Length: 403
Image (cartoon, rainbow, N blue to C red; front, side, top):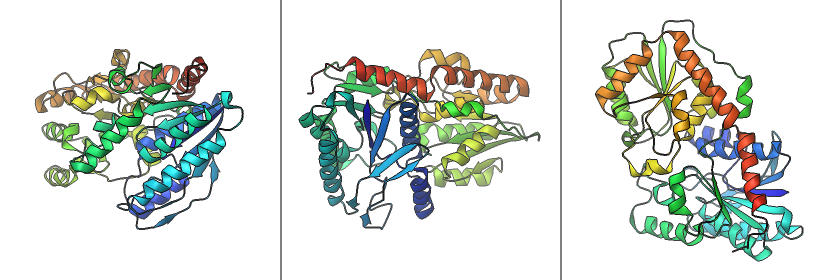
């Protein structure tokens, strides 16, 4: 079977270059999910190619003409869509190129081909999807976020532009023959026609089996968070809870960017145990996770969008072998509960109580918890196993009509 993965997935070379150029986050979480899925498909013997739009816009890069050469990296072949980086014109370029590319790619041996689309990339997705209907090849929608909540952390979905974007998303979201979703709750929102689907809440990197934790021999215990820095993600509650802890040998290390950064820097001035470390490449995040004492995700469960998310950081945290402390997110299956530490109450006092309890445990108890979590996700949720489930979904729907 030949598969075409259509998204913003780019090589590590290009992603690192974008980070160097802008200093920002070129979508590390999205990149990692896509890369692990593609590599998992390749490990299952699939001929997999990518059709990608570099994750830039006129707000992140002043470069007008983007025409990156195709390349291969770690066995993954990347073909980049050329575009002019001007609002409106960029979308036209992505739509037209993806339409004709899939139209040409899909001709011949159509029963053995399928496209896999990241539904949040509107122009690429629509062009590719419409072409797939013409040549009658299967189409799979990968839904890593509900479009209405995709920019819940900022103001990108407000106003007429945001309303139009939502309407466009809704117009094509029901056109796939099957779906990959992150949580069971997503299905009723995304899959209105009750098409076949699978839940892939995350992908553990099978290669992490060879990576060992690298704990410091010092007495310092580090609590680490990496991701979007927004107060509504529970960061304000976490930081204020941490500041109440009476321990002098602990540190709170935070990586990422977001609207909470300015306030975070003020907290850092008040408490030297708090360390804001900015945006860094994912490989540095993984290295930091391996040496941390505890990884934390304080995201509140009361927000509507949490039903439709399984934060990729949770999977990355668990496969590191360093234990995870998290809230009981609605999108996290209960099978994960025995392998993580859980916040009981989502208040400053509740967070502080659990943090103090865990950080007071012997090192061996904490490390054993992390190792059990790693064994669980590597055996049940690794990217090769999850990719095999996706292949079964596609093959089981070989006779499905091409809507």
